[in-house]
Amino acid sequence: MEHKILVVEDSPVVLKVLRHLLIQNPAFLPVLCACYEEAKDRLEEPGEEYFAAIVDLNLPDAENGEVVDLVLSHKVPCIVLTSNFDDDLRLSLLNKGVLDYITKDSRYSFNHVIKVVERLRKNQNLKVLVAEDSSTSRLFIKILLEQCRFRVVEAENGQEALAKLEADPEIRMLITDHNMPLVNGYELVRMLRYNARFQDLVIIGLSAEGDNSLSAKFIKAGANDFLKKPFYHEEFHCRVIHNLEAQEMLETIRDLANLDPLTKLHNRRYLFDEGESYYSRAATADTGVVSLAMIDLDYFKAVNDTYGHMVGDDLLAVIGQEIKTAFPDVLACRFGGEEFCIVVNSDYQGEDFLVMLNGFADQVRSKEYTAAKIKITCSVGVCRQAVDSLDEAIRIADNNLYEAKRLGRDRIVSDK
Ligand SMILES: Nc1nc2c(ncn2[C@@H]2O[C@H](COP(=O)(O)OP(=O)(O)OP(=O)(O)O)[C@@H](O)[C@H]2O)c(=O)[nH]1
Image 1 (cartoon, rainbow, N blue to C red):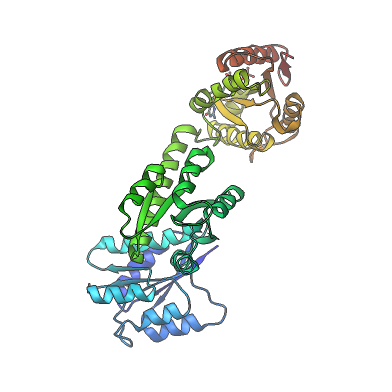
Image 2: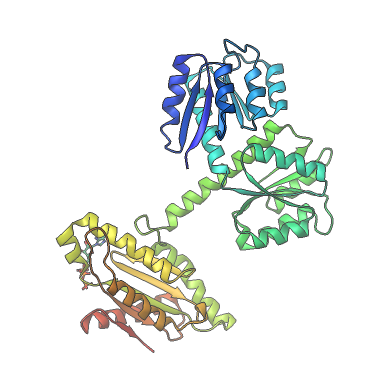
């Protein structure tokens, strides 16, 4: 969906620069206005919705920042880009609810503005939970977050917060007060950090003024950051965004380390890191036998030779997707080349793993893939017996895969 960005600026050069930077992102459609009246007409046009506005304070027909009130009265997030830095003016603008106040002191200022708009676009897909028993405080934080286009969920106490986090995996950030009934903020953070599911949740604690030990306690329990109340909303925005961006960067690095870039399945390294725990758990916790399958595409070299390496890549990517769809929530990885590996617990989806593998092989055989309409089959080797380690399971499945190839391909060979 395209987002209209209103730009109100009397300098044609600045308008041109902002337009150029905004259109680099196809999600943005800049709407340029050279004066207050033009902006007013645009905003009042029926059915027009603006995602954000970038405004200059000094316009030929409105010299004292009137455009800010105009934009805010239409409930459009407003970013001020101005040539004069003035502390009092900055404070008064931030109090009005301006999202950011950026001075045109270098060419980096323009990039900063674009970064703010891009952040807003990402925020609209992110849910933030505010856990706070005071409704006034909760509403204040909710308004601050909604200004940044976050989707906000509320909880009145720690227990409700926990229930909402359990029920809604889309919540990416928790902002929690400490003094709450049932479960307090500090206990809530401790509980969450003991649960692997919430490792990636960004947590910001709120501590009351004068309670110096609480902020440290929050951090020790696993919060990413804390804010002392009362806080200035510029600091609030900065901390929220910085912590979110740090977490996003961490996830990107983790993806780069663990995912195969072509198929988006896990890579071999991840299989060896995680797969062993399936077998150790099965041995110690009596969770049933783990099954492992090696899936190898047949005569894949011929695909490369006939259609070229790029088409071969496309085919591998689409087969990766097929595996993801056919076996959701399993440990599935690209083992190497045109070979894939799947590890499942015995209770996986309550279905027989061999039946599922047969269904998958039937589906691959019946389809035509890529623009070149390629027909392909796969051979599968399976290990379903109880073994002590991942290495042992791979060795058995690999032998069975070799046997499937030897018997003519397009088949599944399993040890039981
Ligand atoms: N396009 C593409 N090809 C790859 C990639 N990785 C490995 N291959 C090719 O996969 C082919 C595998 O060939 P072989 O090991 O002979 O296997 P095959 O042709 O599938 O024959 P069988 O396995 O015996 O049925 C080779 O041509 C590799 O170059 C990749 O990332 N992209």
